[in-house]
Image (tube, rainbow, N blue to C red; front, side, top):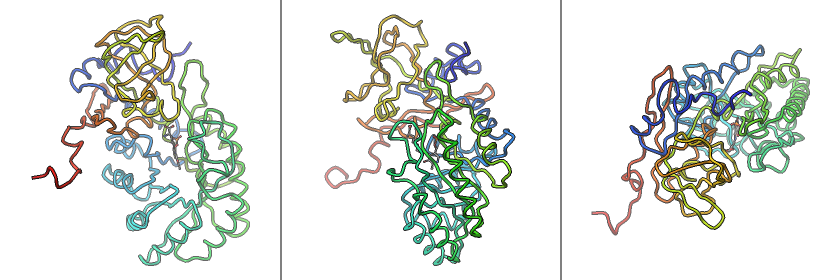
Length: 417
Ligand code: LLP
């Protein structure tokens, strides 16, 4: 059987010849570690498909500046949802023309800044936003390049919290209203229509929802073109899932592109995509030390120094990430892997067969996406450090927080001299 995708780049307790124990010695734990070569390979899987798609990496999946800089060097554009993400992309050297601005609520400040920066496209999610953008563009004497993000009412067959393309989700413009809005936008000289977009959800592990969505978007694009509206690109968003358990079959980027290529055959739309998780998810692990092992009635708890603030997905979406003890073979004893945070929801992995002792190094896999980018400082915990390994060299790409950073923005009168 082939190695699971989330462990494939680990050779025992080493990555590219670098001992994970040494990294933790040097930088402490919890520690996020990414394999840059594997991330590059995932991006290439998208870039080298027969159907040339323009890739806008979804910054929210992992927004570390070094990662963004690599993505820019490797030719990816960026999908952003806030001014903070836009500023990050600029810091990392991303080109404005390669930025798409998604998101269901954009502030005036964000619209203004993005227009001044001359980003590639605004993916507009409501009629109100369309006119706000047109107003700002008029004031600034600019023309905003737009696509409408349409909600095709497709069931992505994923966790309800990360399903976005059904008609009762807050996202996008209902498909039945799209033609009317495009017509209205076409009359407005402050707006330049360039495309049509959608994004139906995340961690989607079957191709059928993508097929349903692209068929529906393509036929809408044809209707719009027939009405004289210049749709030059179709943006299918992100959403491709990753393997999270052994034996789970998940389509590869090539499979998704083959599907889009089949449906879009004999048409000349440029295809744009916004993958996040499928580029970085299985290319990151979280390393954490065992603090203690505790027997409580029938249960065994392995208490580690990483917690829900470092990795939110188990608490938020009941994710069950693969876990391994790098210091001993798998044991028989079923355990819950928990963190020190004062909540029962602070369980990083339920019911896993593992042997563990205090001091062991645990690896949690599949956490490269929506791991560090969703981390918080809850319980006044310091956010983790991050290490990037590429071509046999490990670099620290984020220092661990300092205690001073925990309260640096807190001002008051009672204690400040
Ligand atoms: N484009 C848009 C407009 C999006 O909203 C998203 C994700 C993406 C692209 C990237 O989707 P991906 O390829 O990564 O599936 N925190 C959740 C995931 C939220 C995804 C939100 N939107 C999680 O940890 O599962």
